[in-house]
Length: 170
Image 1 (tube, rainbow, N blue to C red):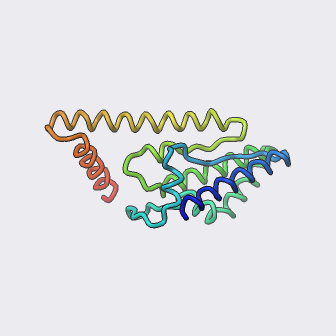
Image 2: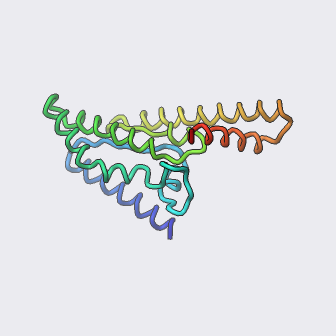
Image 3: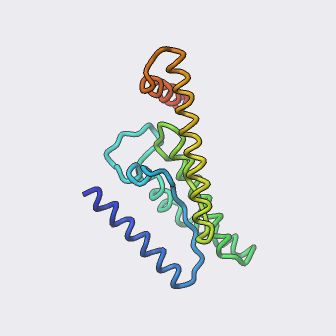
């Protein structure tokens, strides 16, 4: 059931992309590059910390639709560039979405990107590299803690996550 929904979502996104290319309209993409981003986004049954949630991109897109349209219009009016207007609106959506991302580490949040269609590959690669760097740093810190305290790497990762969670809830 859930896999079917994910497949349908991917098909819809691909169809929208094709339609925009055929019509020659400027396109801006807001997304996340971590391999698990879609699964986290679609899992409505997972428990998340207060203020964090599934549908972390879809919900703000719906809630901010009017504001995003207004941002696009204002930037277009000032610059004459619809693409710039869409890019600024996309960055607003990305920021709102990142506030809702349910994370144990910052890798998912750091994998967010906003790009025009022509810059999509490079921006997505930059976001992926940034998020992978965070994951590597997290692992190195946990390995250091595990060695220093004589505990397993798994236990060290759990402790680091618990500390981050306490800091977030202050």
